[in-house]
Amino acid sequence: MNFVRAAALAPVSCLIALAHAPAGAQDAAYPTKPIRVIVPFTAGSTTDIIARAITDKLGASLGQPVVVENRAGAGGTIGAAQVAQAAPDGYTILIHSSSHTVNPSTFAKLPFDTVKDFAGVTPISTLPNVLVIAPSKNIKSLSQLLSTARSRPGTLNYASSGTGSATHLNAERFRLQAKIDATHIPFKGSPEAVAEVISGRVDYYFSPVAPVIGQIKEGHLVPLAVGSPRRSSILPDVPTTAEAGVPGSEFNFWIGMMVPSKTPRSIVNKLQAEVAKALATEEVKTRFAAVGADAFVLTPEKFDAYIKDEIESNAQLVKAAGIEPM
Figure 1 (cartoon, rainbow, N blue to C red):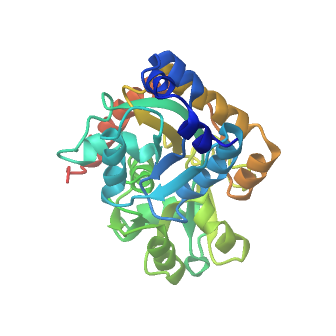
Figure 2 (cartoon, rainbow, N blue to C red):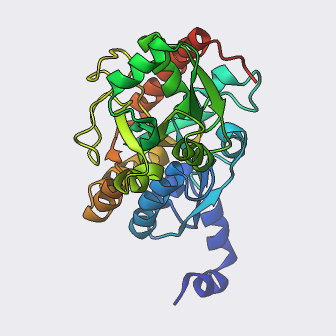
């Protein structure tokens, strides 16, 4: 007998008892209906690719559909606001990038409190940004790029996928630590930034690996370094910016899962355990490897602390770079 028919035949008293069951009992039964995952960026973005890789496994494991909805705009704040205002019941989840910890410094006013309105579940992955340049520039190493920048101050420019984005912050940290003068040119997203770098109209770009790995393999882009603390698993021969001579220039780009802050801790813990289990599967490992992503898991408590630390460090970077809040 299916659930709908059983519910229809059950005594009214039983249905009332179920509706008023203790919160703990309801949490233990979670989930009993489809789960909505808000990705605050466009379909096909790096965050979206990682979200869909993990939600496919979560749906099978939890026994309920886990549906991804893209709510792009305003640096991820539109989708984040939707989750902040959702019922804290585990049925509306946010999968966001590290730009979540940048936005408090780059927006004069946000429609939510980045710390108080969200509970961290766990990071999901880290993905290095790779500094790419067109072959036509005849620059084959980071040291050559630095020599060019220093011999012609202010003549180089660099792309980003938007002011205050992770690609922008990565480039700013690199610029400050390398002590070079270059002009920032923001675009609506990675596709536009990549196209302008390939054309040679823009000199370089700290791109997420996923959107450019194809162009790198085909020779349309030259990877000079990765901006992450360690080398990329998909570009093992490409040094980090620190290894290539710019210490302190690392920028950790991550993607993680959050829920509204008052979500029951039992649900938060269950989601964290399910994500960790999904990341251990060969299917997810294969999908991550294809885009150069590495699994990254923390407890909810440690993820909350990690987010707070990043908000502070990014605030210092934004100030040092002279980025004015929007």
